[in-house]
Length: 139
Image 1 (tube, rainbow, N blue to C red):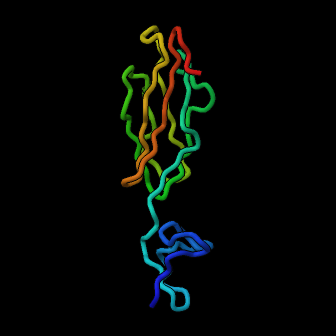
Image 2: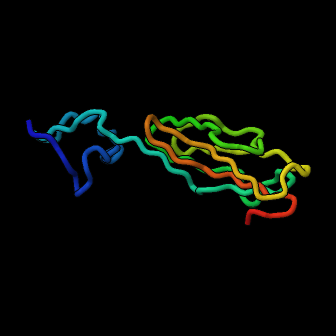
């Protein structure tokens, strides 16, 4: 049985479903075989950064929506001023990752940054967190 390498110019590994049927549940269509479990890992976020004022209040949203090919985990990989107080550490596609930031009672005068990495297996995307300083703002 011959295999499918593309479907309407989309590589087989990027096909998640046909209609409402997951590709991993399709053995073949006619005499053309689909490989089970060949969907590539992916993760993306609705915004590349979140901004907070010196009081720890969000300037805009305090969350991003994570779109992924499966379950995701989040980890704080950089936060030299310890501005992040808490955040969502795991979820599934189309769920929010919410970030809470500490107030800045004069600890840093410049714009502080932190990075949260969202991972699905071996792929990841970084979310930047900015907090205004007592003198210099981030925006």
